[in-house]
Length: 227
Ligand SMILES: Nc1ncnc2c1ncn2[C@@H]1O[C@H](COP(=O)(O)OP(=O)(O)OP(=O)(O)O)[C@@H](O)[C@H]1O
Image (cartoon, rainbow, N blue to C red; front, side, top):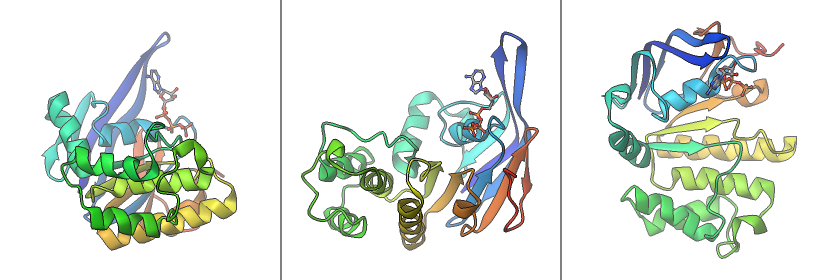
């Protein structure tokens, strides 16, 4: 579903080029879940942006569903994002002028995949029944993050990319939101890549990788990348 082959990425800085990814390799199968861990500044968000086609590698290949994202024009990358990917960020990025229901519908419509039955099921399963007509600012943090997850899953994407999806929540809400995320991902057969500092978030996922010195290495269960 997602593949990085010898991906290199450097940023220009006043001190010269900063090499963030230095031959990163990664394979994520259909329906598989993966935690991406690593110290602050190790390049996790950079890798996620490359996976989403929001940025391009300097060298190497990024493939999503067999397509070489890194060779596509911006318009085709945007189409791929709409139709194949779901994105969830720590800042929820909900549309403030749209209700709960319309936030979900918009995302599905943009992908050309509006399914009223699935939207209704999502609202139930997100625990947002009765709140359909509220605006994002009228929801709690946990409810907003559940809506952000629902919005990403509304078009039934094949791959969900999440950057610290529970980072803004207290521990209790974070556990609930993570459990909901994993159940929905499993039930829809979606592959999942989660960037997280939290071993608690990483533990229930199928695999964990640590990003260090620009490369990815497997991390055993229970190992704390941030220790
Ligand atoms: N546009 C940019 N220009 C220059 N340097 C950048 C740019 N974006 C990120 N960096 C640098 O690249 C490195 C990797 O950043 P990135 O945000 O990918 O790390 P991260 O692992 O996600 O960090 P965190 O866990 O703190 O969010 C950092 O040293 C950062 O300062």
